Length: 241
Image 1 (cartoon, rainbow, N blue to C red):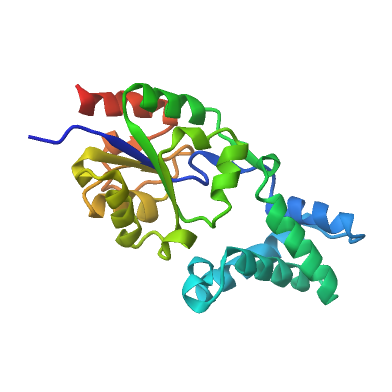
Image 2 (image 1 turned 120 degrees about the horizontal axis):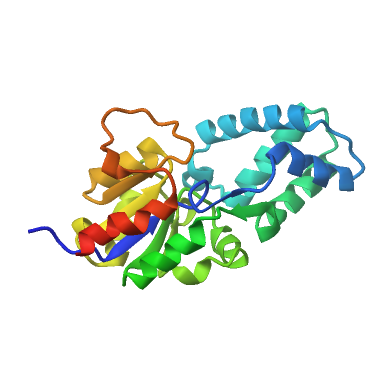
């Protein structure tokens, strides 16, 4: 006999919300305040390279190497702008500091149109909600600013947890907070490995959110796929009936 569903865990970025405009545009806007004129396309390219470099050299915000989310992101920004021929150290630090704080603000984030309704529907089914996200510790402020924080009983960020998806250990921490067996928990996220496979590896009912139909892995049953968060409540209802 299967356990009744009690909790739904959520990924955050690209599941509930997304960056409002491109990173290149946002970096250029801040640089412009400092009197710099940069090309958004060039900045986007430089950012992707800097982000990959830092993610490889200092995984999960470098928390096991003495860094934190702020120092990590400021390093990414400085590296990005350095590639775009900005060399003045004080200027790089100022722009990096300002951008770190700007990305804590709701104005830089856009909540997907189906997010709030899905959260409300899950709550109305009597389910408790939590967040498990590869994010730094600004996530609480971002969710509060976007009007989403009150839906959740807890947040686990990878910076705070000291471990990131696809490590099952971050879901083990979530299981402890939920206080119920894994079979009583669902998880929703947009990443095939980090969200879908990892949650299911610990016994959680993982759903893969695939808004743009880009995942063609044959091992995902159709009932585990979501084209929109609007489809989630009826899927969960089947576990509650």
